[in-house]
Amino acid sequence: MAKEQELDLVEISPKAKPPVCKIIDYKKFLYEQKKREKALKAKATKVTIKEIRFGPQTDEHDYEFKKKHAIKFLQEGAKLKAFVFFKGRSIIFKEQGQILLLKLAQELEEYGKVEQLPKLEGKRMIMFIAPKKTK
Image (cartoon, rainbow, N blue to C red):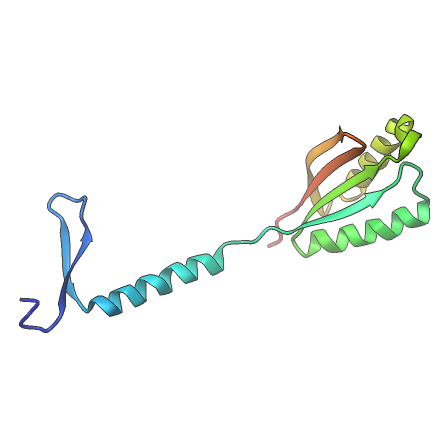
């Protein structure tokens, strides 16, 4: 039948009982398959992570400036990685760093939700905030 129509016999799903075959143009079938895969790939969301760095004694003005940037990043749909970097002996201000990050999380509550609470990793205290879904 395929030769009469000058088309190809293509096995669609070989694992089915009995195997499913169609009489179609094989090149067109491959083209359609690539097109479907490309469309699925385009729909997949790419997660970007933006970083904001604080010091344990970050000034109020600097804090507000960085908070504005954090709001912008979350509104654009990017994840936010906020961290306090402790240099030298400033590691003794761990509590100040944690208070700073928790304050940021509280003020960004309407824009995103905390994915990971502040956690000390080496000389950095890191916190992740994911953007809220917008309709």
